Length: 244
Length: 244
Image 1 (spheres, chains in turn green, brown):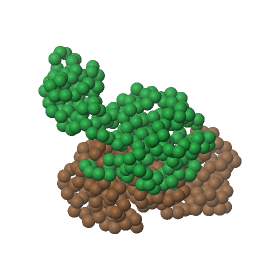
Image 2 (cartoon, one colour):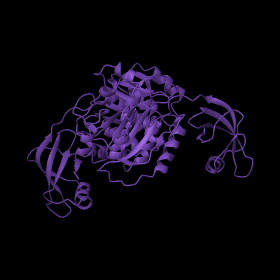
Image 3 (tube, one colour):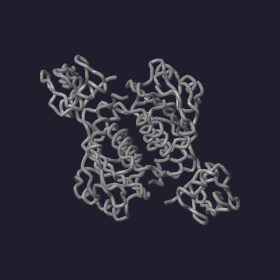
Image 4 (tube, helix red, strand yellow):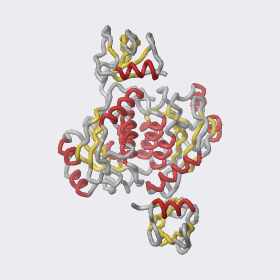
């Protein structure tokens, strides 16, 4: 099994990288790798590198960089803002695999969950990025209240909100009509949906557009995953090859 | 909280329905409902009905049908065939919410899992259908081997297989080019991908078409969920209102 790890350090030819204690433990004890074994490394900035494990001391791992296997390139600029749900980790993992640039947990008025473990979500996002061959890891923002989210939303980024009351355009229609150069984000509500005051506030934002995902009532994490998949297929990097 | 249940019995005005022991237990003990409380019922054939709980004896529940709330109508005809994965229940739940008509577990040559609990998958599908307001429950087929799946596949149904080797068309392009009157199914492989012999066999089928979901390596369940979402958005019942 191929091992691919996200690291903080700069990656460049001739510059060895000391592994974190966590990575050393994972490689030596969990995956039973040793000196001379190969791994892939990426840091979100310097592309992907093939590296060889060195074990300079007991429980220590150093990576000797062999060659760059992929150059860094831009990835799709799509955000997902979401009311935290019970299965928040499924949501974080799946949208990270699907290529979102940022995850923004948001407490709407009907959100039951009052605390988000941002560190855990970051770990989910890193693991998904490692497994799915991304060259970046999505940014995981600290959870904020609904009003703070929309106050800070960049007015140059379209905000598609998943409107469960039926007021939204079919998602494919909305995406196909959009300028592909404008970055986007999706916002999904909690199981109980948005409050009317929240929908009213969203409708007054010039950059916000209601969209719908058909006649069925989707769980919040399903809606977020489905919306990102549709966007990638229609305007993201699923439009052109290479594909798999 | 609204309760919506899938039942076997015919649903018609003036014909009471005896609840199963399981539903009686769920309503009386888990959800603490009693005589006079309302539920919604559907059976996949007779639309959706509002019913009132009667408790004719201890631990017994009867449903008195009040009125039909929705008439039965056709739902999108999309299947999902998939190599069983560790998180098969996430897959079953999500694609059921997204409206698939049938789930077909299939053992490909690189599938690690050797047994599928079909009853459990059916329960996942029923629960998802109850929650998401579907009027049907997806058919859950018994798991078969890859060769049996493709031998029995109807040649009038397009089979989109998720080709991780990069040979597929972008999914939106493939779906947009397809005749909307032709029913479809998706096929996703196991974590290790299809074997070359399987890809070769698929490529020889006149009704099979390779599709791709972009440059990242998606987990098997993510690929199945994303593919169905794209199809619903482009050719299924997300194309037209009502939406939510």
